[in-house]
Length: 111
Length: 115
Image (cartoon, rainbow over all chains, first blue to last red; front, side):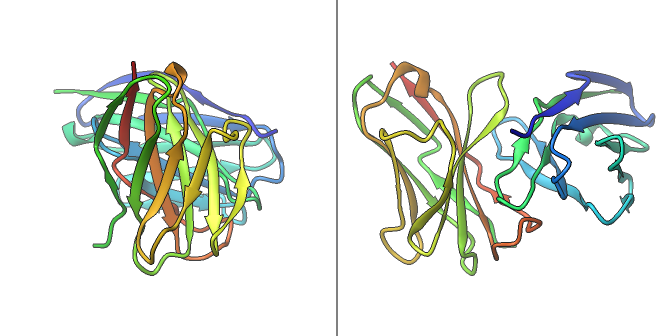
């Protein structure tokens, strides 16, 4: 079955710097790749997603890139702010709707 | 902005007891999901539900689990005889349509502790 690997497990960056989180997936049929942000005590919240017919998508300080050949996708956060501190999850989905999740990255923004 | 809600936020139960976790999906959504997250581990898919039927379920979703939409708004997950290893955060999610690329909106979760 599908497996999603996510790295790093913890990422600490200085406020204002960029953060990059990477995921790889195993099922070449996966066609939808969302990123979720989970703050302490809350459910995952979608922050950006990308579909398999697109290589890059940007929304203000957040961007996601997808390399279907290599089966990896990445989350880029620029000009990081303290409120970006959270756990970030990547996920992948094919036609059977269930999301397969990465293990999560704890992002720490140092003031 | 519409959101998925879940009750209770926390549930403590004794091993062997039945628990019912409740979810109110976004009102115009038709597809519903349960996921769980054991502390420190990945979020895992449990089950998807549409038109009063289970669409898909994972290996985790055994005979101890059941789902129901008892009325037009609630979506419930029942665990018949809880085990210690059922302790986890349980998330409900919903989507508007069935497309595999539809955004899943998650509730805040119910933290279940089985003693």
